[in-house]
Length: 432
Image (cartoon, rainbow, N blue to C red; front, side, top):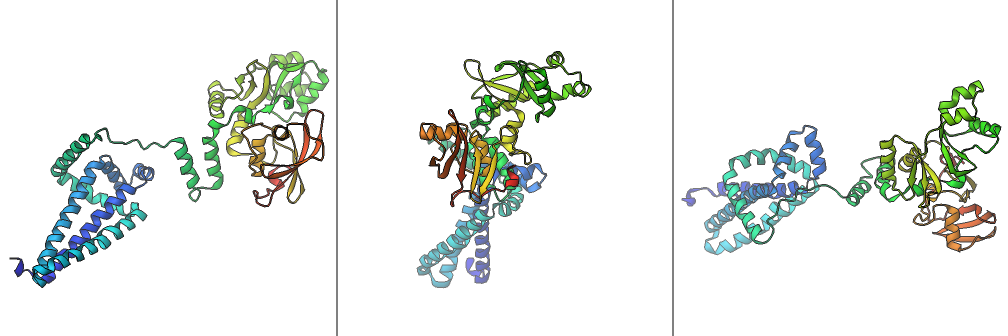
C-alpha cells in the first residue's frame, strides 16, 4: 500500500516528523533551563504563558514523560518512514544507508542545533511551548500517568523514591553569588548595598563602633559652663552623660529635648538629668544583623558595647549600621570617620585611629579586617612594637610611612596607593 504513496509526500511527512522531533528536543532543554525566579516573577506579574509553565514544572516527571513520549513517537515514525523510502529508492540494500543518513540528520537538525538554541534562549522557546504542552498533557494524561507511575516505581527500586526536590531556596552564599553576577542588571551602588546586607552577619558592633577613647559626652564632673558649651557646639543629636569616666554612665540625652531650655538659658544639670534616658548596653561581638533587629525591636538608636567585665568599649548607633550598608552620607566622614588629607597624587595622610573597615570603604582599599579594628592596631600588630616616626613598611601591599607617634600609639601615617591598587578616590568623596 505504501507503494501507492508518492515519494514527495513521504519526504514531506519525514520533514514534518523531523520538525516535531526538533520541537520536543528544544522545548525539553528550554523548560529545564529556565530561570525559576525570573519565571516566578513573570507569573506573578500576570503573564499567562509563565503561569502555565510554572504549573507544568510543578510535576517535572509528568512533563518529561509527555515530552519523551512525543519525541520517541516521532523518532520511531521517522525511522519507519526512512525504511520505506529507502526500500522504494534502492531496495533492502539501501536501508542501512538510509538509517545512517537519518541518524546524522536527527543528531544535527533535531538534537544539537535546537537544543543549543533552546539553552541560549530558554524563555523564548519554553513559554510558547507551554501553551501547547498544557492542553496536550490534559489530553494524554492517562498515558503519561501510566508512564510516570512505572518510572517512579523503578526510581523507588533504585533508591530514588523520595519526594520531588522542589526546594528552590538559595543559600546565603548562592544569593551572594547571584548578586555578584547581576552587575549588568543593576547599578553598582545597589549591588554593593545588597552585598553589604548579606555581609552584616560577618560584621560585629566592634567593627563599626566609636572606640571609648573617642566618645564625646557630657562629663558631669566638669564645670557646667564647659558642658553647656559642648551642648551648644555638639555635632551630634545624642550625647552620653557620665560622671568622671564613661564607665560611670548616667544615660543618654537627646539634644532636641533640651533645645527650648538651651535657647531660654534655663538649661542646668537637674534639667539635663531629668530628660536623660536610660543607657542601652549590648555585648561586644554582637553581629550587626542581629543588632539592627534589636535596635528596631527595642526602639533604640544608641547603644554602648561592653566587654565580659561590663566595661564600656565603645558606642554604636543605627547610623553606624546603616552606614555599613549604604556607605557614607554626604561629605562629612562622621564621628567614626578617618581624617584623610591628600599629600600628593598617590599618597594620603591618615589619622592612625581610623577604623579599617570604614577606611577600606571610603578609599576602595583592601587592608585586612580580620584582626585589629584600627589602622594604629594593625600597624602595631605587624611590627610588634610602637614604631618611631619615619619608620617605613609595606602592609598588605600598601607602602606606609609613620609620621607622628606618642608614647602609647601611632598618630598619623602616610599611605601610598600602589600602581596595581584601587582607583584613587576624589577628596570630595572623603571630606578631606
